[in-house]
Image (cartoon, rainbow, N blue to C red; front, side):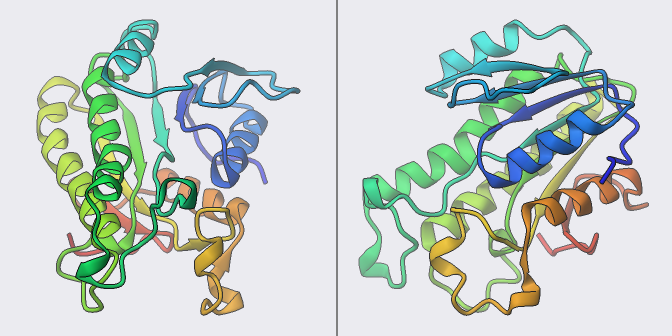
Length: 244
């Protein structure tokens, strides 16, 4: 499917994984997009024609600052970040079912990846985005909604996504002073058939388990027809607002 986006310069952060690969494929196929910058821990794949690939094995304050320093000023019309963690069995990270499951190391890693790294990217990108018209999208989750939390559990993931949402709401205020035309979106893609959701797909209805391609198509449709309300926007794949 051809991307409906009318942008020229795109930055994709976290360019590996199912959703990111689908996103990159659609960006590469868009005739309006002239240049893509992709940042990933993985080496560059083959057959990319518009993409400048940056391998960043470790994301931290120093490496992100150095990476952002190489970007042209006021350049990007669209930034999409897919970075996030829900489970990592190799490092004993899995969503908690009860308070006794909370561990310091896992909780720290949830916040490092889901909250701190996005904040560092926001810090580095404020002078790199098009100040007249641009969008910054971070993949969030419905479970990050404080008012929508009726089930409990998943302490680290919920709290770190809530922290991400607050960072986006707060940074939107400053960005509107420094880059007035930049809008933020916290995007909930639903349950997508990727490695991130694989252990939790058993109870998902088949019609609610989305392909990465569908998820990206829905995001691009939202970007092409954003809400009338002031940003930031916390939206699901149907373009419906989620309570913060």
